[in-house]
Amino acid sequence: MMTKEQKQEIRDRLERYTEQVGGQNQAAAILSGVSAGTISQILNGKWERIADRMWLNLSGQLWDFAPDGSGGEEWHGVSTRPYNDLMTTFEDARRRSMAMAVVADAGTGKSYTARRYAAENGGLVFCVTCKEGWKLKAFLKEVLRVLGKSASASDNDNEAMYAVVVETLRRKARPALIVDEADKLHNEVFLKFIDLFNDLEDRCALVLMATDYLETRLTNGAKRGCRGYREIFSRVGNRCVRICRANAADVRAICQANGITDPAEVAEITNEAEGDLRRVKRSIIALQLDHGTRG
Image 1 (cartoon, rainbow, N blue to C red):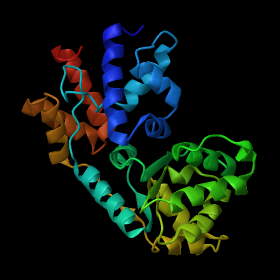
Image 2 (image 1 turned 60 degrees about the horizontal axis):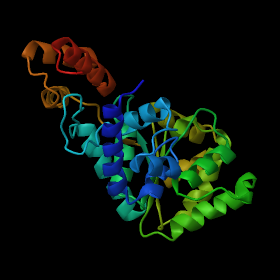
Image 3 (image 1 turned 90 degrees about the vertical axis):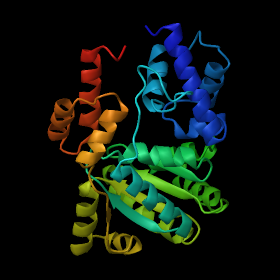
């Protein structure tokens, strides 16, 4: 069971996050599995009905939003090469209202960076994280949720939902929609991207992002003449923007920022991680626990 102190820390992180993204409704639209009502209850200290699983959900999503940026258990992020490359790519796409396909290896921090970019551009940038096998209805419902649109009678009408998505984005000044883990989507959603590209051209950036399988799917589909794939690939410039993996300098910087400075330990983490930042974080936390620097 979470302690009162742990809940207070998460509550303070949530307050900082809510202020940064522009309010409780926008925070609820970005955070996964959290309603505006729940956010309001937590910020107002009404915790009696908030289950531990919700506190854990928030803690996992807000680990780098500590109010004072410090604390013995706080994870300190670093601007790695992949992070900087992704931020630059997202901003370039948004400012030019471009369609792009972005690929990066697992563990480069692409999902975290996309969420961070959305948080820093609240109301203009929206990030949808796809799930395996999502068909059009599930995809559109999630886009509407992220856009902060409430449920309505049109929720079972794909074209009505699609129209609301397009109209909402067209009303904004140079917005961006980032579709993370786009390779997991059902083929009918892929084909709907053609309409999205057409209806939002020069009005909204559309970024499809995933691992290398996205590039394989796009290129193979285009080569085989699969319906719609040549047009989709053309819309993203017949190429995928490739994001580099973290290098040894990135790993060293992360280690130092989180209190791991022994050269042998840093070298071991670097060698074992092979550029995977998830493995870096796990290794650092394990050493912090061994050293007694993490509660």
